[in-house]
Length: 319
Length: 263
Image (cartoon, rainbow over all chains, first blue to last red; front, side, top):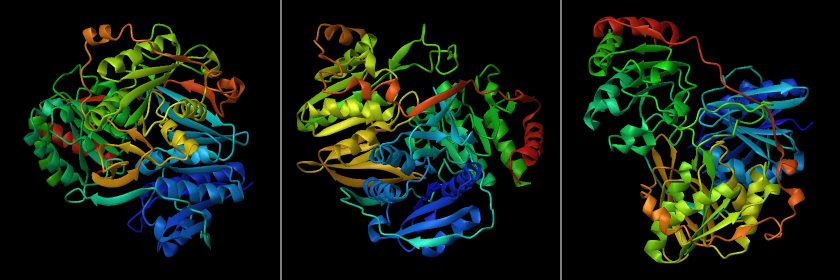
């Protein structure tokens, strides 16, 4: 039993939220398997932060400090984790199904001659095996799968797994895995103006669809989102119409989001959209068409004119 | 530039009611409407645009039964130069790594500078591109939303890293990329376009032709095992709110304070 590993995700020297979600989820799996969680931290200047992962249930941290690992790269991360895993043979390696995790999963699995189950929404331990639940076919069906090889590579849908503070502490062990050649070179990062909240990490999302009628009308959603401390998303129709950028698109071909609160304004609710937001914890739909499919997925629906209801809602929250 | 694009025929989730098959480990596949995996259209369009810019050839490959021929013809009608159809019952039920091994064998029969896949397909796994790159020891980037040639033998690519931030990277050819929607607007394919390519010959390949041992592929070799399929339970149903806008707003705020995590 070499335990359950978590690959920490960091950006600009800080762990991303999914790291704590993954450590918490891994802790439950490790408890079920009767083993411990080891977090793998790859980066630079993260030694102090690494020890903090103990608070969420990591017993140990393997920390590789290298300037070459400061910025994520597919090859650097896959080589480093594969090198460490070959030496220790963990039962499972868990990380986020974030952009980074989606990039890493396939390469890492092939390097370790195993399989990956990605974008999982539930994990359970049954008879000493990990049973992994993941939505398929745009969320119309859920599959429960198992990986019949080791290590089992599992990525988690962001914002789904609870962060649980266990109050432990982790022993940090410095490691120097082989990295090999890193052939994809980051040239620059063009930052979004104003530091937008990442849709996949947002706790509150206010989204607009075709019913918004034009790009300028999204200002009323911006106002509501800003009042709620959330961010603005869009349906595919709104993106195709050129009202919002593709990076704002919520849906199967855009971003899969799981906020605490999703407010869908003027969105009809095509399957492709529902696949991207259906697992949100509370869904409010505002649409004047009583037959819009979005209402069937919502917890609370308002059949009304969003141009009246949304500003009224913003005003009410200001109070 | 020689470009290979890997495409897949998938059940159209917008057109089908998906039901569980008997035994509960697959969906009922009778009477399903199939279409091209949506991401693959963007990958083929990206390949065609690159070829039109720098010259070369676009080859599309699929792994699937006889009916998958339709997908290849659609991509030929879009503008791909040739198709390859891997059709072998022994490959049915392969997991991601199994499919990547087949595509590796296909790629080794040619000499490709660039291999593209869609970012994901119907099962949302999105891992075949990364696996293929690892097997071939080629550089890889997932979820690419921008490609441009960068001198001879290199590409400049873009992808979103987080919160709308766009990362720009340089990579040498040959390489493997998985393509995100939004990178382009795939061109429309009409019925006339598809008719024009109806008689184009598409080579059929099986495991033996690819030099693969069929026993090491397919369902028997898959490490990703299906335990159960189920349809998610719907919640208690929506609560309809009615009233004037200010009344609705007041009701909503009250409800959301109780349930929706607003303070």
